Length: 303
Image 1 (tube, rainbow, N blue to C red):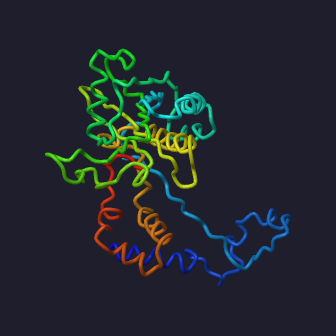
Image 2 (tube, helix red, strand yellow):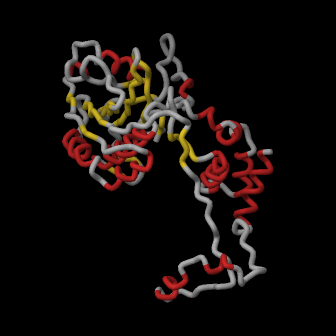
Image 3 (spheres, rainbow, N blue to C red):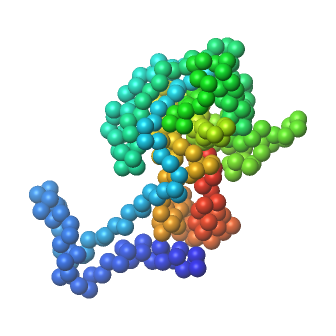
């Protein structure tokens, strides 16, 4: 069955998804903005029908979104861009970027006063995701008033780590060594190389706690300095607002099932030729990425 769908997708690419020049007089040929094209001095070929694009739709798996989101910035000692992040989070909620999330019933995000940690809470040189969760849980033991006595389910706890800390998106290895546990689905992925940041959640008592992990990377893609931190934060916060609890109550995490194969094919064609793309799509990880998309939902949001 999956072979049929893959070749159907390729057939769409090769035939312009159903374009048929045998009927040049059909109404489809008039669906484009011909007057705009003419005014721009561009020729209009009335004999070729306009392509109707069936755009992928982001769908929910049923979990909640944050209708009244808040962000709690937490700066570890050595993080260099606290003032820039504070200014950024204060302005984020009123931006057009954030306003686009209203489509998902997400309201304006409120920035809480940042928590700047002291050397007593200095981050280690290496830390794993389960250790980050354990540390955050201890903040709500009643002895850290800046965090309150209990986590707030409408708040994303955004943890900004210094450049001296390497973060692994996995659990700490058992015993006294070995590779990071691959249970998170990303093996040895580590900060500033395998990812620029991620968001996830854990359950504490009766509360589901959303958090984002933001390493300080010197560069990421074409970005440098504070732009790396603000870009990563904007991405992770918008994802966390629309999918705050990806591990326990996933919400908006993927495109609709009808387009998963097409999206995957597009990703592969960006790096491979068609033969290589087919080899990948018909290979072992097709079941994980296309046939059984739910298998990859209960993972942290990684970018």
